[in-house]
Structures are given as structure tokens and as C-alpha cells.
Image (tube, rainbow, N blue to C red; front, side, top):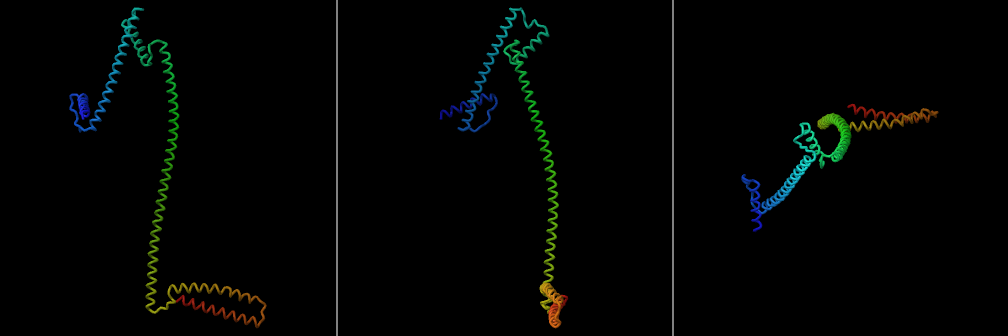
Length: 278
């Protein structure tokens, strides 16, 4: 319990330090929020400590650089009685350019032995960068070529899709038209069937012979065709008798038999035809 209250007090102090004179936003005080804010305050404290250490280190380095610069300046004054303040305007610009170059190249001093390796390293970096740029250009050109091919393919696919949709629309219209015709034919067929049935019923009430109905006539027509088919071998048989050298009496008998059989078939055929015409 005391540890919890201590954490809450630390969190409150940290928030007051962070917001200063500004009001602290309202928040729900419970173990979970207190734990989260305490964790954040600890991390913030560690970060502030690290930043302070870095600042102190930089201040120390700056002091060391100032001391070194003053030492070098004093050494320069003692050896050649030379001071940067005595330089001309052009000399000051050159000196500043030399210093800026040393800083940019991150050399330990401005001597030629430090500048040459730094320039060589910079030149190597430049060549590597140019090589990398060339590789990127080649890769970019390859990607542009692939992109162009992809765009052309996409255009062809879009055109094919458009043609397929048009063809599908045309076929769908044809199918719809055929379905409409089929529905119309079905309706007409049903209408004719109903008409035939009504006519047959009406004729039946008037005493029409059932053999003259549509189905009967169809059956008679089929039977007539069958009879005609059956007469073909009889006619061939008769023709074969006609080709023989006849015994006059026997041939006459056979001829008479064939004629009577043929007359019977023709009479039956004529009767059936007359019935169909009625």
C-alpha cells in the first residue's frame, strides 16, 4: 500500500514537472494508470539523465577544442608571430574554407595528410554512388519496359473483355429471342391441341365416326404407307413372272392370281385414301 502511494506521489511530482504552470489533465487514478505513468516517468528520468550526460560530454569536448584552438593559436603566434586577426579578407575566406572543408570531411586536422585520404574516401563514395545510380537506372528502365508491356497487355485484355461482353450480350439477346419464340410456339401448340380436342369433341357429339379423328387418320396414313411398301415386292414378283417363258395355261393362272391380289390391295388402298379425303 505504501509502495503504491509512493508511486502515486512520484507520478504527481513528475507530471507537475512536465506541465509546469499548465494544469495537469484529469485522469482516472487507479493501480493500472499509476503503474503506466510511473513506468513512463522512470523512462523519462533515464532519458533525461542520458541527455544530461551527452550535454556534459559535448560541453567538455567543446572546452577541449577551445583549449586546443587557443594553444595552437598561441603556438602560431610564438613561432611565426601570426594571428588570424592579421589576415586579409581573402586570407580569412581561405582559412574559413579550409576549416569548413575539414569539418565537412571530418578530418582530425587541416593537414594535407588528413585531407588526401578524406578526399580519396569521398571520391570512392562518389564512384560507388554513381555505380549505384547506374544500377538503379538500369533497373528503372527494366521496370519501365515491363510496365509498358503490362499496360499493353492490360489494354488488349480490356479490348478482349469488351468484345467478349459484346458477344455475350448478342448471344443473350439471341437466347432471349429463342426463348420468346419457344414460349410462343408452346402457346400455339397448346392452342392447337385445345382446338383439335374441342373440334373432336364437337364432331363426336354430332355423331362423327371415331375412325375419322386426327389420330385415326394419322394411323391410317401410316398403315397406307405400310401397304404401299408391301406392294413393292409383289409388283417385283409379278414382273419376274412376266419375264419367264410362259406355259400359257400356268402363266395365265398365275397372272390372274397376281391380278386379283393386286386388285384387292388397290381396292383397299383406294378405300383408305377415300376415307382420308373425307
